[in-house]
Length: 318
Image 1: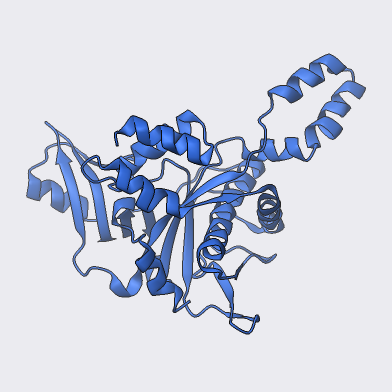
Image 2: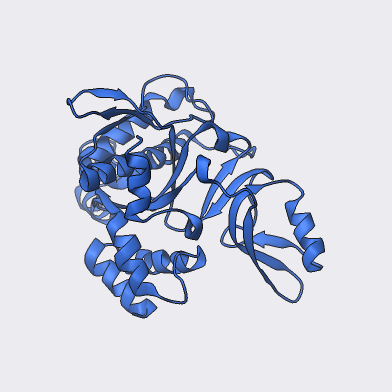
């Protein structure tokens, strides 16, 4: 199977648009998930079995859960001084929660396991050691989860599970999901629940800013809500972490690009690699360039565990 066929299959089987399907395949290759252009095994053994969909009901609950703690959350991006406005902050937090509900749906669909997520009103800390709060046992009652599972959600273009500082040691499992939200998921949600038609546009007509025809045109052009596709890309386990991190590096005439990393990363690692490989220019990370921190733990998606046997090795202990 070539790349074009893989893209066509993703469109047919998931319903995503062609631009998203192309991005999915390109980033799977860039992240090291696709070995030697073997798209068929990646598609049918890894990608499709780990896909779930998030419907309007799930989206609504995650959107409201994010709204509960919005006022108690710092507006700055972690690791930078850039300020996010409230709408952007809400959208970002909702996307993170969608990654968590994707894991909940994944566990339910594949293993009939019910979990609850730790979404309660209150102050959101910069990092929480576990996003899975409780697990339903054989008696039908929920008990506290036995493993601390951290869930990180990224967009489709994410190829790195990036865990800053000492956060890696606070959780037993670090899990990564990719969520196909795009930039307009909140607008699509507002459209489907008639915020625009019955509130914003109606008010615009009342105020004389637009007429009925213009309101109809604006409404039609707004994005429609569709079930959101999420890819549970895999996980790393603290207990089974390699003691010596591995990396892959491609070197050009002047600069170097790190294509894979598996384990701890420290502030002096890039300088050490530059000296070892005699690189005169800069070293960047594939797909992102630089991270907002210089120490922690880093894994490309190709180094995540994702097979059914991998999931079952932790599910029995959850």
